[in-house]
Each structure stands twice: as C-alpha cells, then as structure tokens.
Length: 345
Image 1 (cartoon, one colour):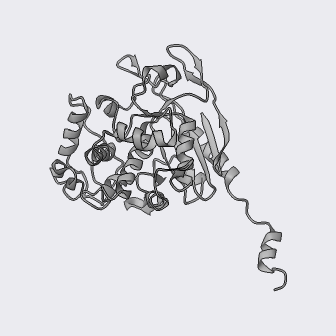
Image 2 (tube, one colour):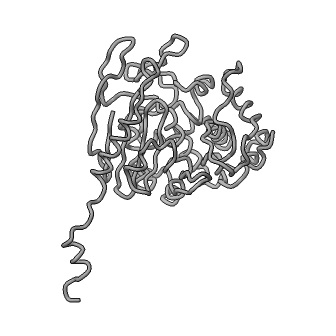
C-alpha cells in the first residue's frame, strides 16, 4: 500500500499485490489494516510523551526515576526522558526473551531491573526497552494505559477511526496477517515477540492502522499540530519534537523520530535534510518532509507468510521516486537573472 500526500491533500494512493496468501489468497485494498511494528514508537508513544511535556507534566531532561523510582535500580538513576527518546540511554536493545515471563507487569519489572550496557548519553543504541519505559511513564503520569490514552488524546480527536492497539474481531477481515509463530498465524495480534508477551500493548510496538489514518496523522504534523480545527500539539512542540540532532557515532535523530541512521533505510536520502520518519520491522514506514510539505506512507506485511520478505529496496526506490517528484525544481536561468537584475535597479 502506497500513499503520497502533498500540501495538505492525498496526491496518490494505490494498493498492490496481496493482503494475505494464507489461510487463503486475498487481494490488497486501500482499507487494509497493518501491524505498524516500530512505527508505534512515533505515532502513539512519542506523541503521547510530547503532549505530557507540553502540559508541563513531564520533563525531557528530568531523570526517569523521578516518575518511576524503581527504575533507578542497577545504575539507571541518571537516565533522562530525552535519552529514552533518542536511544542514548545505554539500555540494551530488548528484554530477555529466553526467560519464561509474560504480561505487562512482568515486562515492566524486567525493564526496571535492567542494567545499562553503556553510560547514559555515550552511544546510540536502538532499544525497544526505551519505549517500553516511555509507555509506562505515560500511564504513570496520565493515569491511563498507553492504549487508552492514545485513543482518547490522539486517535479519536484526529478521526483515525481504524487506528489502535488490540484490534477487535470486526476488523479481522481487513487486517494483513504477518508470519507464523509456534505454528499459529499472527493475524490481528502483534507480531513483535516482546509486545506479544506483554499482551499486545507496549510503547515500542502493537499499533495497527491504515494508510488513510496515517495520512491524517502526517497532515497534522505538517500543519503544526492541528487538523480540521483540532489541536493535538502546539506548533512549537512539533518543531521541538522533529528537530534533528547529531548523536554519538554521527547518527541523526529527533525526539522519537529518525532522521538519518542505520534504520532510515535510505528514506533520508530521498527527501530534504528537514525530513523525519520511522520504519517498522513488519515492512511499514512513514516519512514526512516539511520543506516540500509532502509525506510518504508505505505499508507492507513483508513477513507474511514465512518471515523472509525484504521490503528495503522497494521502500528506498519509492522514496527516491517521490522525493524527486516533490522536490522543488531548481530555478531557471531566467529566474536567477530576474532576481539578480530586477527591473528598475
């Protein structure tokens, strides 16, 4: 599924191929719902966190332990909210999945007991644990679990009717299944193993959505945090959240968002330096370019049915095509001459 937006409108939308091959072949259509994987991190968790920052209820440079005292264990007392958002906390990439545990509380106990592998701020290490912790901060500060908070404060206000965690059975026929796990097809249940163990709601993965809903979200960001008269974030909050910084190792990230990193999959090369976005393990991506007022949504279920699909070349090629199409044309010689030698001067 490919959707391109430009200047507040959908410029192109098309579905290609198959929604599923198992248990029976079904063609893809524009209403399909996809497991967004790590795109959850920015659409749900980062947005929720920045709303709480904007409201003065959460401080970017405050230690996480100020809000969750148990998190200070094992050398984590100095880790800040900002370091979680930029993946510079020093925490490892994921919780231990060899150990026998299940449920959200068990995952949070393990996150609180984690020991950093690097000093906070010393290195960029992409970590799902960072966003598991951020999801818990949303719950602790707002009093609502992340899925409930996001529904009330992000998805419903934006009219994202098909976006949420734990999709109900009425949407099953529209959902693109992913791969088989333990012989069972993941179909309407999150593919990410850690989020699955947590019950389907986590700060790093678990969100399901459509291209049209994500287009509404992208338009909101390009319009300074508002859409159809509803304000989700202030313009200055959007600017703060999407402003790139160079992290250790030369990686460029914003708050939650990717700009230029090993996870950009070439998307950053297709658009201008102000562009930002995120990719997901299931084959989904969202990239937004304020300079051209354009965005690109690519939704695939690359893992279906055998877990071996690779969407990176396709995603990169689509980004280059769209980037070339929306990038402002260089000025003509006549235009340069007119600016250099205006009449009457």
